[in-house]
Image (tube, rainbow, N blue to C red; front, side, top):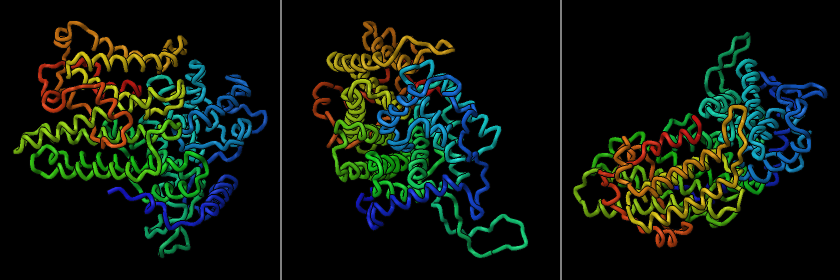
Amino acid sequence: MVMPMDGLLSNSSPSKIAALESKINELKANRAGPTEETDINTSTRSTPLAEGNTALEDIISRDFLDMETAERYLSAFKTKLTPHFPFVVVPPDVSVRQLRQEKPFLCLAILASASYENMPLQRALGDEVKKVVASRMVIGGEISFELLQGLLVFLAWSHYYSRPHRYTQFLQLAISLMIDLRLDRPPQTRTWKTELRFGLQYNLQSQTLNRPSWGSNEQRAVLGCYYLSSSIAMLVQKKSTILRLPYQEECCKSLYETNEYPHDKYITYVIQLQFIAEKIDHLSAKHGFDLETPGSGSELYITNLKSDLEAFHRHLPFNINESSVNKVLLAIQYHATGLCLNQLALNITNQESQSPLESNSWRDEMSFSAFISATSILNLYIRFPSKEEVGFNNTQWVQMAFALLVVYRYTATACKPDQTTAFLDTLSKLRSRVEALSTSDVDMNGARDAFFDFRNRIVQIENWLGANDRQEENLRTEESFEDFQDTSCLELTDLDGFMGAAETAEHFDFPIGDSFLSSEDLQIPHDLLFTSSLEQIMGD
């Protein structure tokens, strides 16, 4: 079951003391770097950029952009981008000049991510980020916290850059930094392992591992690395290399209590949701065969996970669907987590059951819940203030694409004109919003922006739904509906508290149950396969 928030966040020191200690530790780490007592052998570039030293990261001295434009991009990062990825934060009073001197790579990654108004420049800056990573990490062998923060920013908005994105490879570099810096554990950790040291003095007694601490910045980075790895791995059906760790819960607790920035209090809920999502993923991986066996008790597993998700929603001290920029990340994450849960449930209901009546009833509930969850994600986006989605991180865009595929699947199998018309209206609104973000600019390779690619996928779905001779078009495809069904992730979520649930049910009258799941003669275009579509959206 989900741990109540008051249980997770109680019995702690006063927030002001925690904030002060965090700042002191961070200042010590930034000024002193690793000390003799540290058991980490790191190679760091601790010296800031000197005046007149044109380093690879110093894109201002290299005339990529001027200081005024850089300040504007930094401001956009603080206000528009950070709420959608609150794991790397720049204090309000920090200027580009200061950031450029103290953390040049992080500054470069931030300016690259926030320069979305100038796509050719953004693509060029993205290439510069890759060059710095190659120079400092691959060739120079550097290990530093600044590199980790910069990589997290680069990964969070990786959809903005040139393809191929190589998301997984850059993610593994970030994870390697986290491990080498020992950020998978608290700054002081008691260990009973034998040290691999050679010297005259050797102590076989238990040791305390001391490492530098970067305070609240470290805590956010630890959670951000977990979020990026776990959320994307589930969506594209890959293995996450970061599992749930006790230190992650400590970081959540500290950030929630200190509440240094407005979005810090939401980080705990985002990570708690991902913990639930990870349990769903583990259930599928460890008990996949049981899920396909009638009477194996798999329904009980699904019911328990559903209860976890319902308890999470019930204990939230605020309305998750309020129109707040700080809550959009959490709201989309909530609905997407339910979608993954419903995939397991639909796998069960596809099997023969000794009680067909109960199976069909449960299948109806799962189907309806999946549809509500997917449309809730799309509705959240449509109701969001215009052009604010430029701050959406890569995971959010993939989750929206996920929802788009699911709603299309339901609508295509329903074969009801009213439902098709309603979905076409939704697609029209989506297309209008995305088209407003796209420009006619091309990068050095002649490629258009990410919004142009997303817009083309929406148009594809509109064309398929609007085709008059649908059966003839479907027969020309190679993939059957059953093949498509096996590659899709659907979801189960609690209907209570879902934004627009009643409205959705009224405007989207679709068949649920057998009429949806057993449409053997329906063909789905090959290009809309779930896994391949998400991979193409991400550019991997």
